[in-house]
Amino acid sequence: MANRRPRNNRIAVIDLFAGPGGLGEGFDQFRDRANGRCFELRLSIEKDPYAYATLLLRSFFRQFSGRKVPEKYYKYLREEIDREALFEAYPAEADQARQKVWHATLGGRGLKHSVVRDRIRLSLKGAKDWVLLGGPPCQAYSIVGRSRMRSTEADADAYEADHRHFLYKEYLRIIADHAPPVFVIENVKGLLSSVVRGKRTFQRILQDLQYPRSLFPEAPATGTLNYRLFPFSHSDDLFGEFRQQDYVIQTEDYGIPQARHRILVLGVRTDVLKKHSPGALQNGTKPAPVKDVIYDLPPIRSGISRPLPKSQDWFEWLESAKHSDWLKDRVVTPATREEIVRTLSALDLDLDTGGSFVPKGKRKIRFAEDWFLDKRLGGFCNHEARLHMASDLHRYLFAACFAKAHGRSPRLSDFPSLLLPNHKNVQRDVSETIFPDRFRVQIASRVATTVTSHIHKDGHYFIHPDPSQCRSLTVREAARLQTFPDNYRFEGPKTQQYIQVGNAVPPLLALQVAKVVGKLFD
Image (tube, rainbow, N blue to C red; front, side, top):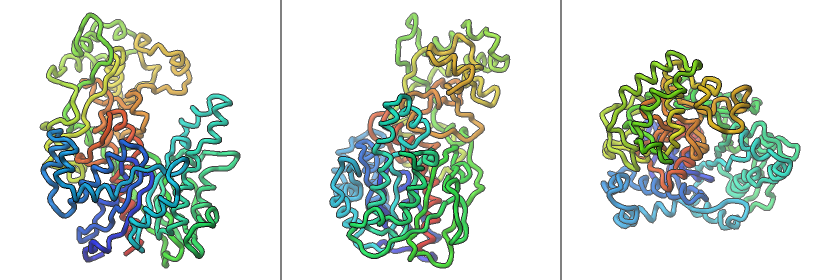
């Protein structure tokens, strides 16, 4: 595309089960060779009220594309004004945002499908070039989710009947109704091994996506509707066959600083296909390590959820580790012990616990600066440490110092016995293990492990690599590893912010997906 695509000729995008909008963000940010916008998000649908609030704010931000974003937007992010004042100052843009973001439930006891169909048709405004995006809720497909749901015989029956197995049919029904030229569907890797009532879920989904009207013959559109399905992992002959594993994308292979493995399926209507199959994501971009992605954020310390012994403050309690019995345990390696002593001797007594907005510090980001930073913001949203129990502080200190000394996160067998949690499963985990890495440090010199929604329950799997901060990752740090720009604020209570980030598609990956999709419309 040598010329800029005019506004009325942009490719429309409808985003279902949008979450906080990671997939849509990548499409919105994609630019052609003339730096013109190719895609326009016409409608994002999400049922969670907090994710909806995040989507609405981001949609408001997008209404200023091509114009200067008002200073009041940044004042809101800095919490100098409230949301009502922001939207009242720009009512036209706020109304546009509300038209493009819909708080609605698809499937189950949600809206009648005719209502959804009419709203999508209205948003498309007759567009012929458009893309359908979406990732049906995936908890029932995840491996950990399945193991929890099947812990008893009664749970197994509930698992078999879980409505989330069939939410993809709502996505499928919209394909049958509207016949998008192209669709992209995303889900967890655990879908590959999911079996419901004796049938492999992913195989059934692939079959249904190829012939969507076979399940919905009553769809108002007429004629045959067939799709060819492609993975994004590699390009292949138009009539080639793909293995189910081919649809798994390992995000670290595409420059994302996180080992996140997800299913991505590209569907192209057969009458749209020409002589060649779609291209593939460009493999081989070296991902940045954790330290290059989050170490420019101002250092902060954890909060404390329970009173400390003898009225000690955070620093005094942490320093008490120098004289603790657990530090003398023979299992503590000399390198770890030295790192602990070094860390405690250099604690920054000015550290606080951060906040909803934290002013910018002196450090510089070392990865994708143009993508993440917004100089007008002057700091960072959602950068507040969570509260940790006092008993966990010494565990985090030990774990982070061990990781720094040995280049790997400690297993429970590496912990001194006095630091092991008093849980009934811990001894089993030490010896064999269901969760031997119950305390997982994000290694500074490597890509992060998968950021999941579980981060909202506890921080044990997401310990910050800097032991002097002695805490788990903040929402902003998790958002950085998910590649959300810094001016992308997550709304709602902190717990809900974590859930939004953990469930999202990395926008930088979505940007690359948009490039592949855009070429189909050239």
